[in-house]
Amino acid sequence: MPTAEPVQLLLSRLKLRHLRVMLALSEMPTAAAVAERFHISAAAVSKTLAEIEDIVGMPLFERSGRGLRLTEPGREMAQHAGVMLAQLERLAESLQAVRDGSKGELRIAFRTMSVQPFLAQAMTAFHRDHPRVDISVIEGGIAELTEQLLNGSLDLLFAYDDPRLSRPALRSAAVVAAQKVVIVASPNHPLLSRRKIAARDLVMQQWCIPAAGSRMLHLLHTSFHALGVTPPTQGIRTSDVAATASLLQAGEFLAVFPERIAAQLTLAKVARVLRFELGSRVEPVAAVWNGELVPRPPARMFREFVLRGAQEVMRPDAVPLLAARALAAAGKVPRRAAGVR
Image (cartoon, rainbow, N blue to C red):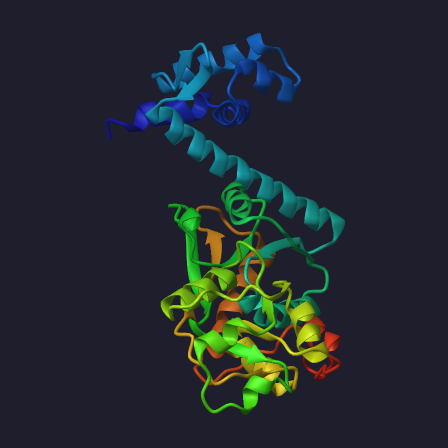
């Protein structure tokens, strides 16, 4: 084949330090900034870049007074350099885990309370079967967590669909089905005795209002605007399930939840579902991972475990357990929810 010789020549000349410098230059504006990161001189960085461009036979950056800007081949090379370096890091982690006698690391994150009950059960069961796997739950915004998926530092993200997750490297699978959004009320709320409730009656009540920027707040506002009334503003702002459960027990409040969490709150006698159609739904929750990286063994096992479990959770009649701490806050902890078998 005519291309075999040039390809082999490139592979024989390209070194690990070239990939590291290439990736760093794609993330930082100047050779001086990259030199500071690696504790070398700016001249050494420039020399390495010249070597890389000589190897590939084309310019990878455009030079200007503002610094360096990737060319199209440069973007391609930086993307592949990132994947290769992330994979090498995973290899090093696996080897270190073998030396240490552990079973490796699992790093997950979630961005919606709808998946908390299912994920809590999955992590508990997985930890019981694989006690030497170091499991970490990572916090952060969707943009930050997406970047961690791409650079390989995060194994799995559980989230609603988001444009920022539309990256070629990322794969996803639904783990919690789409659900209606319903209004729940404190167990003795006066509206529960009414056979017919108007939207304007709801506006005047005290609410556990979802936190600013949350999906539930957006759905609440959208629903009330569609009903032709101003969204409720009176009450206490919180998106924490445990705090909301406590407030529903302590006073006369309304709140919005996906119907499966509402069903569990009702089962625990923390709240009751109000007879009122909001007309809103939350889309499925998906597990998202980087399909371009070979997964860490614990991440692969956990992902397969979760996707098998999701087949049961996605059944229309399935009702997942609410997070144990939410029920504990209301003094209604079932044995299974508390992790007791």
